Image 1 (cartoon, helix red, strand yellow):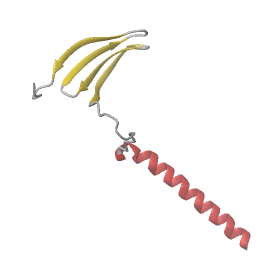
Image 2 (cartoon, rainbow, N blue to C red; image 1 turned 60 degrees about the vertical axis):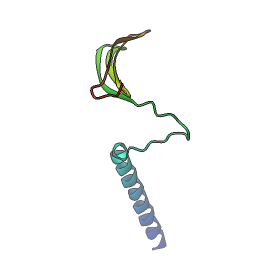
Image 3 (cartoon, rainbow, N blue to C red; image 1 turned 135 degrees about the horizontal axis):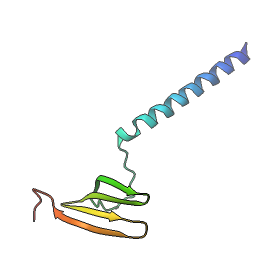
Length: 91
């Protein structure tokens, strides 16, 4: 009888671990945990959109604080295609 109780305990613990891992993986993006070292600078980078043209070639729109950058990247190079100030940004 004691053996059966031990097996049932192990099954419940494993089920709880699996449920915990599932919930953590499902809601990890919504929690938005940011692990930064102390004193790390905030660069204000945000990727708006990326268009893939070919394998390892793409064009990406990136916001950097009060500017918007259009960047083209190839297999061996990265180029700034366009840059402008966001609307409503202070000069």
